[in-house]
Length: 305
Image 1: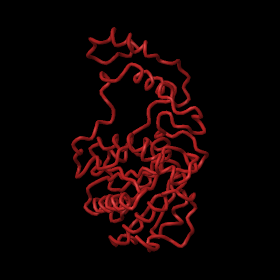
Image 2: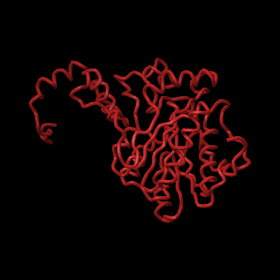
Image 3: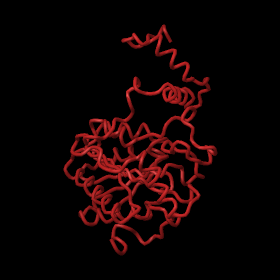
Image 4: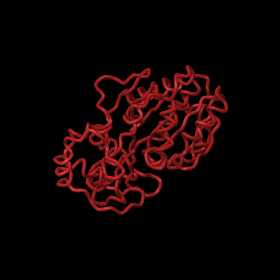
């Protein structure tokens, strides 16, 4: 992987020293060149640290509004079905602003590749808490650490989309060592090969660091990522050839097996999302609901609400 790939332009990358965006860019660029796809590919730039990647890749690029990259990719792939279309998105763009676009593009099985870079934070805008920020992880908007009861659990987007029938290939990789970068490149190659074969959507997550946002040196951030990010976001294939890999846990445990405080935290977060102002749901509330509703087999009616 020595030297600059033809798939990259002569623009100097705008990323912080130690950031892995540059490595991921190189892996994508090398894949396009080696598979002879450079002149057949359209990439979609999202909003975030990678927003300027239309300057960095040598293939055709299109800028999308925040979170809307999968929708733009859908339009391009359907208009020019002979093209290879990929999005390049961070966790704030894909898992927060663009959750709806991501879920529905995956569910429809659009013949595109989604490259999802997860560094657990909003890197470009000041280090705010993202949907993927870990429990207890400090950010500019969670200065005392992410607290599950009021902020909900970190979102596992990759496991979520793997359960959708339109998604053909789902994997989670990293690029912080040579070994991991080679595995990530093979995953990216497989994703573009799936596009060639018209298999539907391929979803490649890259767990990354953000040493600037995490307030660490690059080496410290890689160690912290290994010790904290990987246990929650384990590396490896999740869905291959349209089938879930055995041993991969479900997206979330059945509610009957969740603790009362876990359910209370999730419900409190949902009640207060999108500008709503509702009271907290306590673990005692959940305990009471379990007792009174344990025999229920039908959903609640509108009158009951």
